[in-house]
Image 1 (cartoon, rainbow, N blue to C red):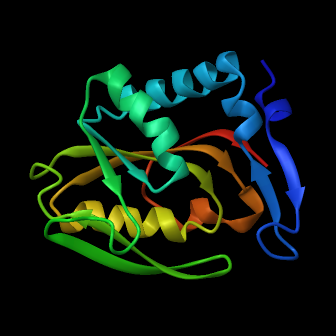
Image 2: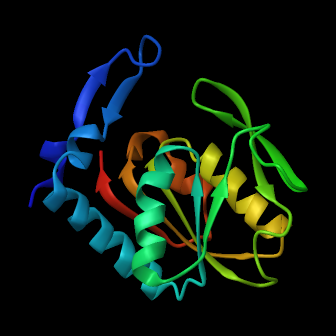
Image 3: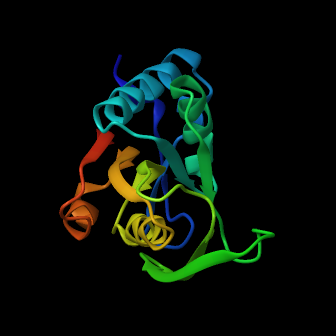
Length: 170
């Protein structure tokens, strides 16, 4: 199945000059969604993942079902102010601004092998910050799984040393 036909291009969103890759048509097609999950599942199994970590919010769409398939814990990485218990924070840059991510301090067992899932790899800022959070709380990044990778933005290079799976590359 050609999964790219389920990705909609939206020019000038969220700001002028950005070409947004919209995954909602993919989400609306059960067969396409299943194929994406199948590919992410294979990568997580190959990484011997012991937990699935995902970035708010679109990463949750894929990570929840993936964790369920693998019978693994799901750990959310959230935007500031969303986690109620003691947490660790990392500030980072993304393609059009700065942000912060948080993870509960007790979210992972020491040396837990983690597969990090998100919908998009662009510059790699969000993914790198998530890896840092995982490592701050004692986890080991076993790999990354992305639905879409924007290769021209060199996010893969900023994640040097980590195993990366992208279902679709543009």
